[in-house]
Image 1: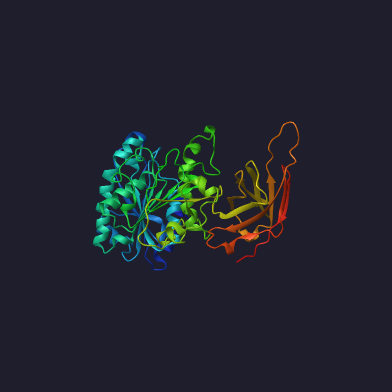
Image 2: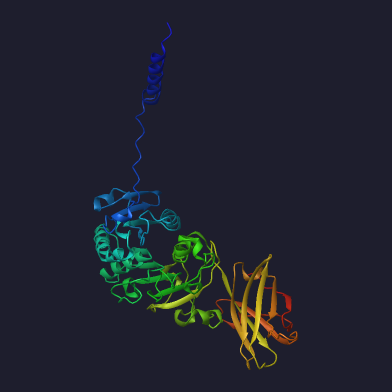
Length: 456
């Protein structure tokens, strides 16, 4: 007799159970360890720290493990012989996990063989900014206690690298200060400005907090700190108004946070890509754009600093100078890196007024422009032009001599001069390449010349 519907289901279920467990004699698969994640805090639940330390290792970059004590660390895959990267987020408006953190961790583990520990202090960083600031000392003490557990396992202080974002940069600074400045490195990604610009060095990130301290500044006119706080301070695009970020209020939250968060995305991009985000020391952004800072001789003895995981940012001198402002230009999106070239124009004759010339590099229908100003009664003017393609792929240069804006008649003024260019850093004049023929320019008329530079 054929089994009824209930018996059929029972028989089928039993068969499946037998096939999955008993037919081969194998034990059931071992359950995978549960991955820990960041907490979520209601804005009304903020100010309570509830700190979590989440460990991520190269063999399993997508699965965080909650580690509290030494036994947790020993059983979680932590490798005391590797370097340790500690990521500390900043103020959280909504009390949610930082949107950038997962990609940051994955990229960091792909770029280097290290232990990565994310510090989750969402509860203490949520609500009112000034309440989060009050939590900085308490959080720093908790992190110090945790790091002491690493030292017990054999980790050296010099192998610890703290990467702090915004308010997290000052947390990192305080932790470093409590360790007597002996931690290996602190990277501040747009260290927070409010409450810290006028703070003492004991209260904020500074160059004495680690063997090497660097900071990337992208929002100095709003949420980021305006002053240098490390051995090397990168002021990207002058430190404010990043390309590609909205310039109007209607963009909402993106308008508020885009410049500030650009430091995070720049650092991630530096980890992902081989094109260098190289910067150049200069007294000011204006002086850099005017071509007054062409190499890294002073004070780095020609070792130009670079954003990323290069040891000491690529600076190869001891002792390290402090609070050196360095500048670079970027594109509006990843990988962000630009090449920087000096552009020069030498007039044949003196003029009684300023001479303004727009210089444009062309490469595969992409253009990059800059302006050279030659002061009156001077023959030489220069500037910096940034281009996303290598200099040897620039095939044409265009010039436009700016008109004097005479309303009543057309400006027919002409000038003659010599144009030269060189890729930064310009350590020797032999690197400078000049057009073979003099350049003749008439006011408001664009002139084009072929540019041929061999690839090295």
